[in-house]
Length: 227
Ligand code: C5P
Image (cartoon, rainbow, N blue to C red):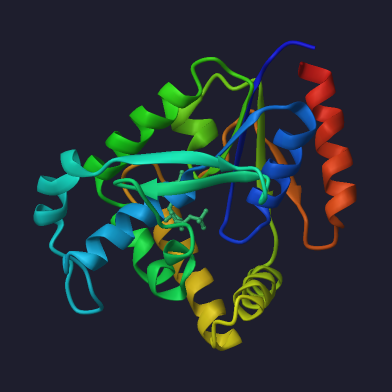
């Protein structure tokens, strides 16, 4: 089997990262969660007071972008790589509903996208990579050998995210999670720079009614066809 690039795009909370992690582990590939990169920049902007519910000082964030360093470190106990913002592990801090509320606004900024896309392309230059996000098959790796586009109904996705947050002890309401999922979908599909669209050559998977195993088996067959 030759090494390939696998691009997984789709709406929020469609289980992209679960599938990507399963694939990476099975194939011995690197897994990169690009959502974590946008979330880490958002967390930085929040900490610096550049964004809150009333305003967003894009200019200040853009000016500080060169000082932001992101890297991943593989955690053998967890079985996946955690993200570091300027050498601080921020894996926990970036998964809150608060970060989710602002991340799509930060991800609209072209300068942010350009910085992250450059780093993502560098990480994938040797292939053998599974990357998930919103623009992987369209912008980051338009030549990826396999592109998957994942969908599920907003309610299914909100339920999954709600359960995840609850399991972590976050006291959130289902309604707030659903609202966040819908808002992010809207911004992600309507933004000017790299909107979330399905690449012409992507395989669409609606996993509203697919189990994790069924989905994994189906995608593995696709990998075997192209690798
Ligand atoms: O994948 P996740 O839900 O963690 O992504 C958080 C947000 O980051 C998305 O809603 C989107 O606004 C942004 N994002 C993006 N492009 C990517 C990955 C994530 O715009 N490649």
